[in-house]
Image (tube, rainbow, N blue to C red; front, side, top):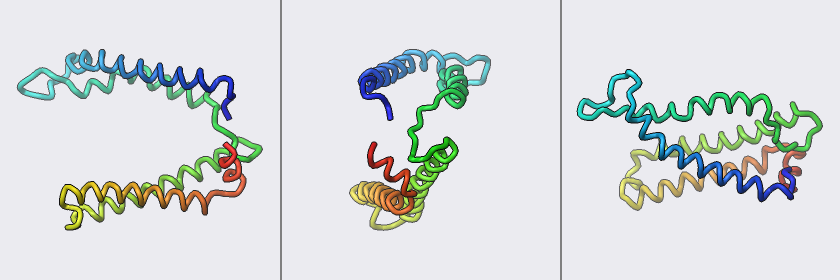
Amino acid sequence: FYPKRLQGYALGMNGGLGNLGVSVSQLLAPVFMGAGFGAASVSEVTNTWTYNAGWLWFCLCIPSAVMAFFWMNNQPTHGEATTLLNLKNFWWMEIVGIFASFLAVITLINTREAAAFQSSSGKIGRNFLLVLIAAITEHLFMWSLTPASPKARVRTQ
């Protein structure tokens, strides 16, 4: 759904701006964590305010979220003529993915105390099992529960 002639540029901008964000965070987060802004310190031993690191991006994230909500319209059409039907199909597929992840979380909670998963190799196997359950259920649900028109459109993308 994105023009072929602009895909390389978009990928470069995404990677470049992503790396810029990491660099700015590494540079400015310690400054924010070292500034109390009048609040009590987290520790009695050192003057640190680690929770202030989140405020670094607050002034950029809120306006960006508002602008994206109102002016960003790059969602692919999922085989329907109207935006409302496209959103219905999009959210249907999102809910299917969330449900598959929910099944993996239920498995995570139920296998927490299982004796088979208490060793170090058992813990790794448990993580592998959770990813396997989430991936298989998501693919099966997507294959069987997605309406025909968005399914055909996603296949051609």
